[in-house]
Length: 94
Image 1: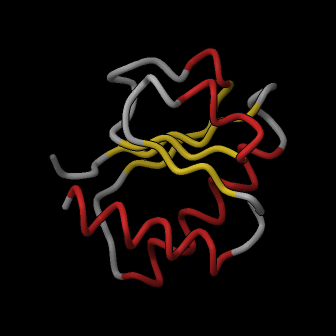
Image 2: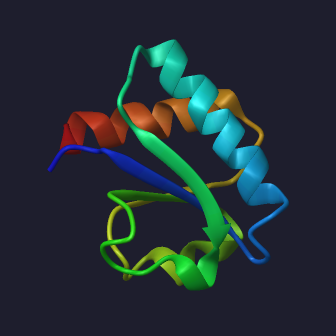
């Protein structure tokens, strides 16, 4: 399964999910990854099939863990942590 859509989620869908989305887009660009849709929303929108990969802060892991592939970050502002997690997922999923 290739990663074509990434959904960044938070409780309200407007604060940390937007910051995370911007960081994901920046890191994907640095990695040379193109053709990937990145969205942000609430954890209630994180449903199976809504995205190939969900990104959340570690405190929200329980909301996405049963929905599919996900990344739960200890520090959503850390580009280093995000890049390592994305590289691992791309190696696993393509």
